[in-house]
Image (cartoon, rainbow, N blue to C red; front, side, top):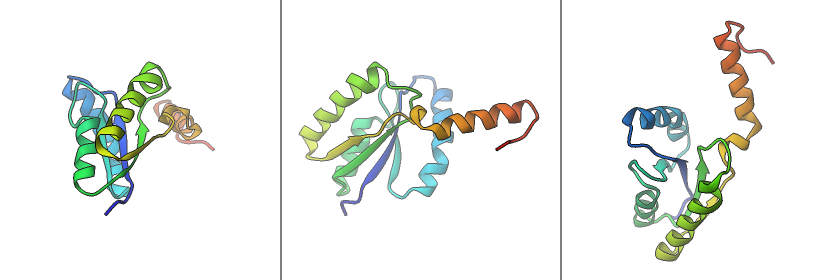
Length: 125
């Protein structure tokens, strides 16, 4: 198989309502992008580890992680790269880490649209 698997990575929480929010945000992407999954860094399932191992078992050796984080703090600068390094070593997979979703200017535009909607102004270009 060996097609690229896309992983939407969220931090994770023991609060199911928090996870439900991220799963709802991920749903349009998961439906539109073949071979995509959501994973959590910690405190929730499926874990990044389990999603990578599931992919490798299905024949995927190439993964791209898209962090659903607003900015790159300690987790994205140290913790996630260390997890990736360990997973590459243990599975033989190639795992790339994209910039956090918050660094994409499209997110700023989406926030503007949500604020305008909340103010009853609709979307303005």
